[in-house]
Image 1 (cartoon, each protein chain N blue to C red):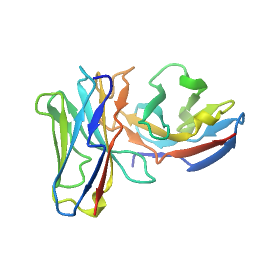
Image 2 (image 1 turned 45 degrees about the horizontal axis):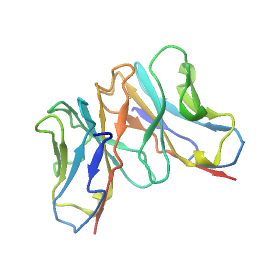
Image 3 (image 1 turned 120 degrees about the horizontal axis):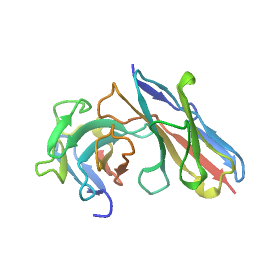
Length: 114
Length: 117
């Protein structure tokens, strides 16, 4: 079955700490990978996406993610988090076998403390 | 419009009533999607339109749920005979082209919170 797994449901970090949020997927065929963020009181926004090419993708606000095909992973990273990064983060995948559905993980809630 | 607009933002309804949720996508966007998100879960795909054609409705949970986009722009998601388990946030999204188009970006609205009491 096609699925997206985010292993960390709640993460608490101090400002300036490094961040890595895990995302693994189970899909057949070609995949497109996304990270979305939802800041408190706001709508879902695209952080970054991978379709093809360089597996290290850089997004907005200093975030990056690396597609490792052999590990079926697309982990999100940021070297130094800020208080303003407090938000919920969702990994999402579409695959050549999934039609039009963008399939999301359950999300990771990140709290950055001053 | 500047972004995807959804209304109402909040809706409380009694069990058994019908509810209609509206989505106004970004002007010119061909593709429109509906998602549902329960508390503690990620968004779950419901249905997809390409212009006015409903291309995929595999995510609609049962026949109480329906959606339309008659003129290829505004869409309405209708839930008939609502039940408490329908309580969730309903998200609409749109994109300039289809989901599989390289470089395509899906833009989400702020969502409609539905509570069935």
